Length: 244
Image (cartoon, rainbow, N blue to C red; front, side, top):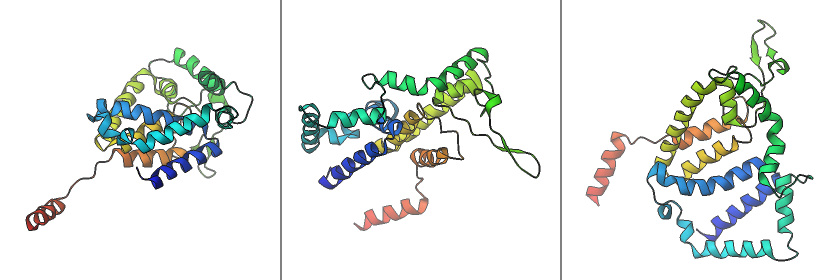
C-alpha cells in the first residue's frame, strides 16, 4: 500500500478513537481479523491473496513502531486505549468481556427471560422486552401506530426473543447467504458485512430502517450485489481484444 493510503488509514483510526465509538471501533478491528480468516471458507480465497498487505514490509515496519510506542515506559498510548474502551469512565478496562457485560446486561437479561418463556415463536417482531414501556406514536388522524422505538443491544438474542427459534434459523440462513455473496465480491465487501454483523452484537440496528439501520441496509445491499455484465459490455470487450 502507498504511504498516502497508510496515512489515510491512520487518520481514520485517530478519528474513530476521538469519536469514542467503542462498538463500531471494536467491530472494525475484529472484522479485519475475522474476514481474513473466513474469506477462505466462504469465498475460497487464500489469505495471502485476500490480504496482500500482510506481505508488505512497509506495513510490518509501521506495526512494529506502533507496538514499540505501546510498550515503551511513559507512553500515553495505553492511557488513550483505556479511555477509549471505557469512554473515559471508571469502567474496568482490564477485561473487555466485563466491560461488554456491564454495558449490555441491562438489555440482554430481560431478553433471556423472554426467550425462556417463548422459545419457539418469540414475543413478536419489533416488540420491546417490556412491552408496557413502549412509547407508541400514533397517527393523529386515524390513530394508526406509526412509530415505536425499541432499544436492544445484542442482535442474535433480539432475533431469538422476537421471532423465536423458527425465525432465528431463517435469519441465520439468510446471513450465511449474504456472507457467501459478499465473499464472492472480494475481501472488501466481505469486510463490510462482517463489520456490520459485529456492530449488531453491541447495537441491534440492522432491522431498524428508520434510523442507523437504513445506512446498514444500503451498505449491505452494496456489499452483496454482484454487478451483472451486459451483452453489450461483453461484445465491446471482445471487439477491443480483437482489435488489440
